[in-house]
Image 1 (cartoon, rainbow, N blue to C red):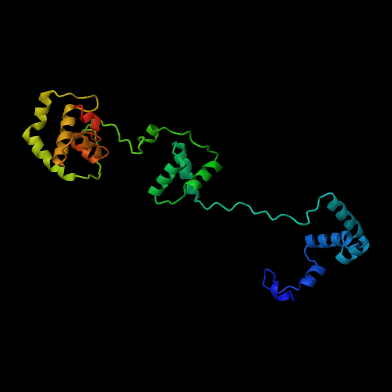
Image 2: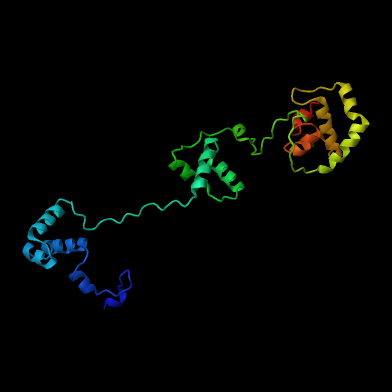
Length: 252
């Protein structure tokens, strides 16, 4: 009655009664012979004859079974699944860690290259490669404020004679149409003659052009410059890499 419920890996039906009476695999034959002697009380000679062993072999099997040297029921070991992460991606992850980037930062960098991978996978790859966890960084080191906002770059004077050609997006490009008028009107020369306060990074001309830019964009307060202090495109208008911070502008 078991025939229709039991099949081999090849799909052929198996007679379970015959399967246990006439074992084929060496491991099963060992099991049946030892069981016949230990449980059914069969003599070593009869068990040896029935399962095709020499009497000396049966004796050795019993000895090894008692000593635990024969594993009649071996544990099926399921090894770890093969890592599916592309080796090139793993190399990128390791290179980013050498740059002191955290797992989430590495995940973001890979996402920029359209590589989708979880932060846990990144951590696992780094651990397998022998990397430990990074020391917890301060907000300043991470480039964010206590309110989780990105800290903009420090404003610095640009030397246009050394500036290489580049393209960059600008949220308000219309203000650049006023540059010819600003140059022709002599506003820059007037500002220079006023000898307004400046700093080592931001000259008085750059500060005044930054204020003028706000007016051209329709902004009334100097504090509104904080909305644009991470825009290199607008910083160039004033001759800076980025516009000054509100704290600086309020002191001018």
